[in-house]
Length: 423
RNA sequence: GUGGGUGUAGCUCAGUGGUAGAGCACUGGAUUGUGGCUCCGGGGGCCGCGGGUUCAAACCCCGUCACUCACCCCA
Image (tube, rainbow, N blue to C red):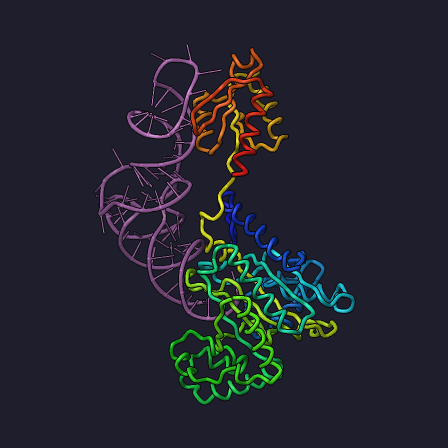
């Protein structure tokens, strides 16, 4: 039996990796401008970190976590999301006491044992942002604007839509949740089986059920926005004013609820219609109680996560292409091979990318490979070049060649390459 | 966890009971040192796996596994 990769896990091969590298560059460039610094956090954590923060009753905790007992007898979990770890690190390293205003971002793998489908994998990568220490609505607007700027920089602003909502503070959320549970109970015969269960555990979720009968039954359900206290109403209103002022287009969706328990006040999602059922590319919100919940001094916070596999799908194959070598070394004979290897090294020390075949193949075959790998130049070393200590330089696109001294050849190729890089 | 679709060469796929195919890719050659176009050759497959029906199965039947899309969930 051949060993195969696990279900829902992926190999990112050389064809695809340039897109990942480019994406990470764009992300870190934009986030750095906004003052966010990168953190790198563990993939494994104590299981209780996630069950306490994400919510015992969520699908993630109930059935999707990779949890096991390690040989030391400790129950540990492969992180299913990033915020819990970030908040844990924030508290554990004393930021809540010494430096409670912090802007963090991270890039890394998360793990959830779901049935894979388009845009959904068991190991998937997220870019996450956490902004600690600001209660004011300016932080909400700033984080959302940064997310929008990233998608604009990637050329995707026309293909995603931003939806925002406010769930209110803990009291509002509780009050609204009770109101909705009562509302749902009055129409329980019209709800799907799943939503009947939700009424008891997490009534908010009946709002975003896709079942047509539930959609109909909850069409005139009370809106969370109408249940906000004065302070939360003011907060949400200011977020919208600031986003308008920054020219960030958004739509208020009062039915949008998030799956994780820790969200309060502002929540938002970046949606697309291009990825089938997986329509959320990025999502986030405020979590003002989470730091305290994990034993830190009360510190407000908010953040979001972007699904990178979904982002790469949106960007498409053409967005980033593999680097092709500048120079292909062509040679015949043992001495020419030595010369080709030495010349190749000199070129590479001058920042030229080169490639060479180590089998003694015919020149024809070597030129064929040079062509298919997309090399711009060929350096040809045969018997006559070895004799004279020269090298033939061929421009493959223009099909023109000249024989030069080694120094002149290096000079020619490296200046032309620098010139073409600057175009 | 539940449904639908698909499993044949590295890739995309044809092949409806009678000796496994095409295109692309790879590789060698077309007067012995030059690529892209063309032509000729070559390597490659327990036809996902197991069972059954049949003189005979890639093809029909049963089971199983994998992939995929959708439900669900979410990034």
